[in-house]
Length: 146
Figure (cartoon, rainbow, N blue to C red):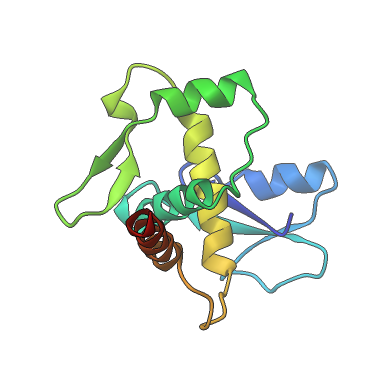
């Protein structure tokens, strides 16, 4: 693990607690990078941070990269997760839209979103949407040929 996304509210004690159990960590963008240390990435629950994370989660599912070990709590959280769309088209998971917990789904989106922020894709690699359009065009061509 190279980074850990965290919700900003009441996080003041996290670096101290990590240090107490022997984990070296630093807050990305505020402290100097330390070799071997975990970078802590502040993560909001509003549209700005959440929308790209939901997009990254969706892409990881579509590309079959998302790994779910069958944990019943994570299954419960994803089953309860409701995506809401804002006026500008951005999406986020909203806990007010359900009676049950969604924390595991939110944590998964934060982790995948954090990784997506750091990942730099080669410019010549097609996006998932381009791959989907190409696959649909190939399927249509095969259907028309028969």
